[in-house]
Length: 342
Ligand code: NAD
Ligand code: WQD
Image 1: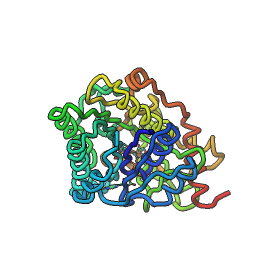
Image 2: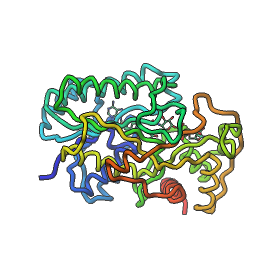
Image 3: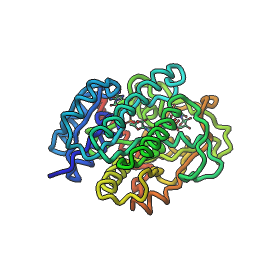
């Protein structure tokens, strides 16, 4: 029988792509999502791509009663991938308690139920935000964790600490925390992708919406950084490469190949690209022009960060394969399909 994997936040951007990849690798996927930042049509999309509809439950993982009832009824779950969280950095500054409540309370409920129902394996969505502006680039997993520069970032640091403490008290739980850099793009089918609500905060959806005519122009936040072209540098990783790493992490845990009961890996491409690189590459691969203007730096942005992925390459035998150009093209194809552009 297929191993049953609970994917929390599985209707969301990264969760839905991971669900597809899990199903394609013969895992049985069960999704819990309250649809606070997603839509049920994404579950239809997962079914359309894979031919299998994952079991889906809509409720809030901060609801202790509903969460406990769910786990009491699903005692055959072998592992959890916990994606469910709020992720808007700017909003977390203005509404910190919303972020602390959702991201921390849901994880407490997950960890409590893992303990109560002897669920031994967890993959946790962490973020490169834990590194802040690293002193050395590319940044590896041993770099010091910097004070968080947003409540959102702090929830990821606190979550990693909470998991470590839980594992110290319960040696039966094994966790892999995956620290994502900047996930971008969409599934090759353009059936699932990123669904930002309102005005996008992130660079790629802002670009695709600008080119699609929904936004007048992109604001490039700063051209006075200490980088070759003056714009900030990030590590943009394609969503399908990211999803693949989750399946590998799950398999590693189920096959008990992890070397410690708390492991953490950077997931990036290992390559840094500036905002202007991204715009130029987008234009080259899509043949479209991106309207943009340079504006002052955005508060809270680090100058440059990209991943040292050698640990994930070696230990997970995983490497991001998709080029920046193809990642951007997939984002544009998704936007076109969403807006009915031919
Ligand atoms: P997303 O918002 O698309 O997906 C998160 C999903 O979780 C949504 O479908 C939402 O409805 C659901 N959710 C949120 N709170 C919930 C709750 N209390 N109960 C049930 N469902 C809930 O976000 P994403 O981009 O797919 O991110 C997934 C995870 O990866 C998050 O933990 C995020 O912090 C982390 N992460 C994301 C990025 C990124 O740039 N996208 C980078 C690093 C880390
Ligand atoms: C990328 C670059 C902007 C929008 C965020 C979170 C991080 C992680 C990934 C969750 C930056 C520039 C952007 C725009 C621009 N998420 N930019 N104009 O800030 O690197 O990372 O998402 O864990 O924690 O902070 O991503 O896509 O917002 O920005 O010039 O309209 O694009 O300044 O240099 P970021 P982003």
